Image (cartoon, one colour):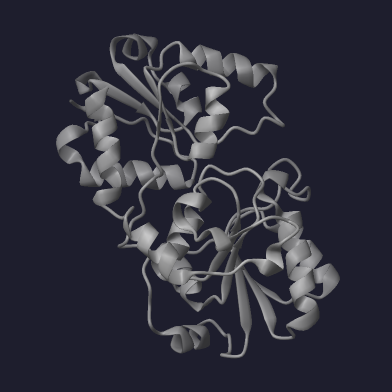
Length: 304
């Protein structure tokens, strides 16, 4: 068995998954498609980069991260069914994605959350020193959000599936009672939140593009990380918070139910009743670290 994964080149978490898979599974992978027996289409649009000859001749597994039915138009439907004819098995990264996908296909679906790299994301018992390094005090109440919040076409409209409007509403309420509140943002396309933070006088610090070491440090100084998405495949931030022992609350999306205490999952109406549980999330996330978190994927390919 030799698995080939086409390059993504999207500056997305899936690029990292591909690199990690090749690094830790050299004996069953190849970077030459001609030498492969299995094709892993790790993002669904990648199938168009592959020669039809190989899609027909080899075993094909395709990963579906999530499906946004609000935007699932005729063109996307046609693209999906073009892809489906070559797929032997679909891989969904959460039960919620499995449920979405089962509305489109009768083909076999295997549900496995992605692994997490414990060499990148880990707890540091240096909260005071790290806060001082990044210009924060012990008394600051720090809430983090490390994912994009605007659409790519105008950089102003909120990307509603990511729920930045929900995040903003929650933060505005916290800001009324927490005078030391500061928001930490990372990544591109944060214009929606930044514009509104300026409008409502909410203090924040923005690290646009930083390396993994910095992001890991930022996780370690937070009092709370918030996931407010309406639709998600992951997000990986849930597992990353687990390994870094970062207090986290999340909407019921993606892998939240796999990792978080049920009391740490909220909706728009009961946020202030939710409670973090660092130990619960840490223990669940540890189960998905490398190499353990890759074993179900290896079995998926072997079974096919």
